[in-house]
Image (cartoon, rainbow, N blue to C red; front, top):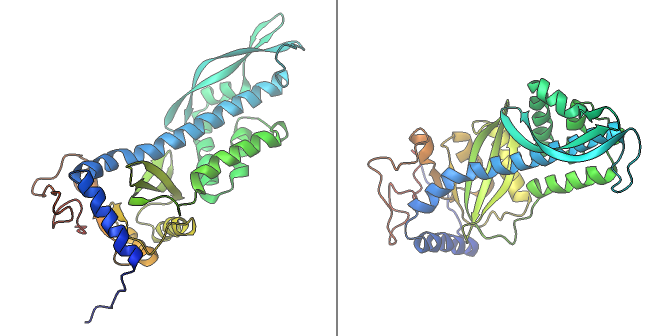
Length: 309
């Protein structure tokens, strides 16, 4: 059967050259790719953790304000007053999150507990529910609902949340999912499935020409879910990632991923199966694989090759 002809554009040739130069500049493609494999998922974990951390601290402040009113520095009023903050720790699904929790004191009866903090300490299921609200809001782009839904879980009413606070949370979440990519020189795209509590999520992390990592998108689902994979890649395209250029895609070998890459970005994209998945997530280079040289970073069997088996 004859193979269909493929027109190689100038942009594709240029990007392929840039990828090769990137590999040569790093001496061996092995080192930057292994660094990418080990750290790309951590980038996503760190960002989700930080967003969850900030949301939790904001909710604790709102909970304190429901008890003592809005804090007015230098103008104490009422029987219960704000009294600074102190370190604390709560469970967000399967993750422990250190937080700065506000303190309240009664004029005559001493320390007053923060309702939301006490609920989170007593019922770990609430943390699972809150993480679910965060992940759903991020993946569906319903940013305005994330903070109110998380807050309601621990008894903070929507009426207690100002528009300013909600708008600030929306802007933070938009930065995670709605960045444009036209002006960023992305060379490598690492796609992997991760689990946050009970939620399976797909993430794409890009590496630019300077070696800097960028979270490009997050989508609910696993790498075997064809619809989820296609939504993730279509989102990258819609956010300005050019389809007439070549990127080095690093994936876990799922057929749905490879098929979606070809459908959205074309069949000439270099695709590398992540060796951590082959070797049971052991970062050591599997025996029998070649260490690529400066002269041939895409040699057969190398980490820069198009082999996925």
